[in-house]
Amino acid sequence: MITIPTAVLDIIQGNEIALESLRAGILNLSAYARQIQPEIEKKLIKRVPRGTIVTALSRLLPKLSDIHPLRPLVRIEDIGIKSPLVELCFDKSTETIKEINLFRNSISPDNSFFTVTQGFGEVTLIMPENLKTKALSAIKHRPKGQYDNLVAVTIRIVAADYIETPNMIYTLTAALAAQRINLIEIVSTYTEISFIVRQSDMKKTIDVFKDLFVD
Image (cartoon, rainbow, N blue to C red):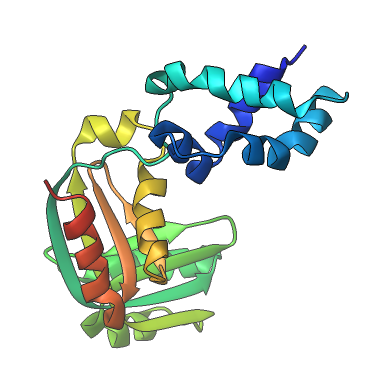
């Protein structure tokens, strides 16, 4: 059966502001206990005194070193830019996939940025903008979505950090969201993550990564 301390820990671990405020010693325990009391009572299916929740919060303080922050440190080794790009999205069909494969085989393998992503019902291409006309000619079906004037801001990170550390993607996207940067797509390989944004957002995107993550 779930206990009050366990319920309190589960809730605060999912609340970045509360967790980091508690870690910094500036969280108003009584006010926060009042805020989460209904959720605690719902989890335990019984009345829980507010003072008991405050006590559970205070007893978490010595254990905070064992609780990983929701935004871990991201170590970026390199930042690269590719622009201008275009994104084309098609309904997925056997014929469309065949045409995309023929088109992909017809272009130079030296293109520095080219991705094809297949979902259950759609397939998306992101490529240099100078290939758009050739792509639209080779792929007979009309794209259901098209974005021009895009840029890929690609970061290279330490493989062990990326694979083994929780919330790496969240850390990066949260930083961009704080600057109201609209992400068109995210594309990743083993140690690289490419954030596809509009060219008008390129400088802000680079500045976010430089200011927050580059050592």
